[in-house]
Length: 473
Image 1 (cartoon, rainbow, N blue to C red):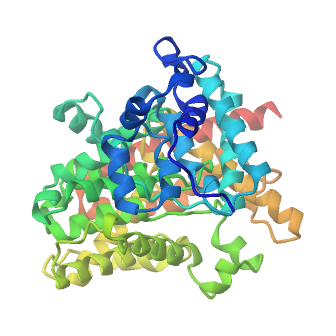
Image 2: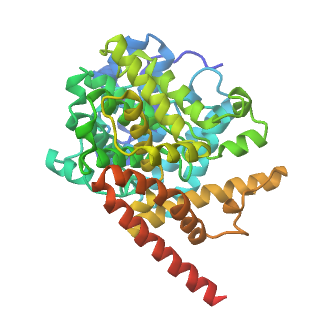
Image 3: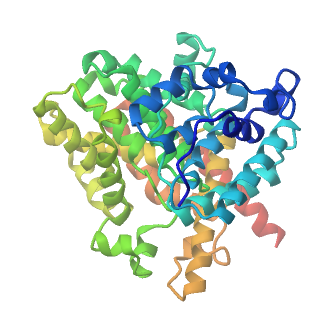
């Protein structure tokens, strides 16, 4: 077990050596100025957000973590600071010395790679593998240190309100454009809640919503598809349905609030493996949920666990009846994303000739339909964006099939690279899952027809690609 951290200038120098951005070398040399650290500089490091955290958590070991995020951090160094924040768990009691050294060395390497402009695609892939292994090996949870500096990242984008609305009210948007600036996706997410009037209506404290978004982001794993970018993408799509397709005109504020929260949390802590694998492999998670909608029940559990933390409880000012309704809607919407129950939901939508907006049951079915559409909405986007999402989901599928073969488990044909291709998979996906569902929602909300049209266009493109490859062989 690590000894409690002592607040001395020597320790501050050690932290500066590893974590102050290299770009500041001209004004603060690691070896010269750091050797002359005095009480004044040390107090500066402890000011503002860091000082508040020390008082708030009242644990000296947390101070060790808090020092990593000094007031001098800026947005250009977000990724390094983010990586540092994710490593906090290594530096608390229970960390073995060899592992601590490994992480500190890796963080220093990341720092050097970024400052020298060597962040190649190959290196990014290696970095993702490293942090995925970190998460799996130590089961790191997100840091509870919601610093003011962290929250500033959810505000500081440089965009006007009109610019944010323009980005939100289009499907021609790829969240991976902000892979190096994830905080900007949090800015846009915050804007969704704000523009729908939810923050004012439910008196959501700004800091609590920011905390919620930061913890949500950190709770998604760094895997090819079911990650925070997918969470954002689904939420963005729900917002598009509500605003551009005018669905919000039929729903109350309670329903809008529940929809955004459901979209954000619908795949939280997804392991990159589907329900079939979790059951066939006799995993603890599968057993815990009795092999029934395993992932979806887990996502619900993690969502309500997060909302149960006072610093993240965005429902804090709702009355009991309102909070109960929101929770009920969230559970229903997340559970509806299980593709094994896709058929029954589609059948119910087909039977619905008109929507009785005074009926809670009808509203819930529509909400589930919207979440389901958003969850499988990759192919309603422009071809190149949809194609990139398809490649990511197939990467995750093929990784699972490899693991299944290794363990002697059944492998689904659509996930086996020896039996399918991305083009074939997407054609089947659009034909049998995507279009039937979108057609039913379009019947009820005609403004969604643009989504069906784009899906049909993308299917034609995939068919041409498959024909070319078939002809070549």
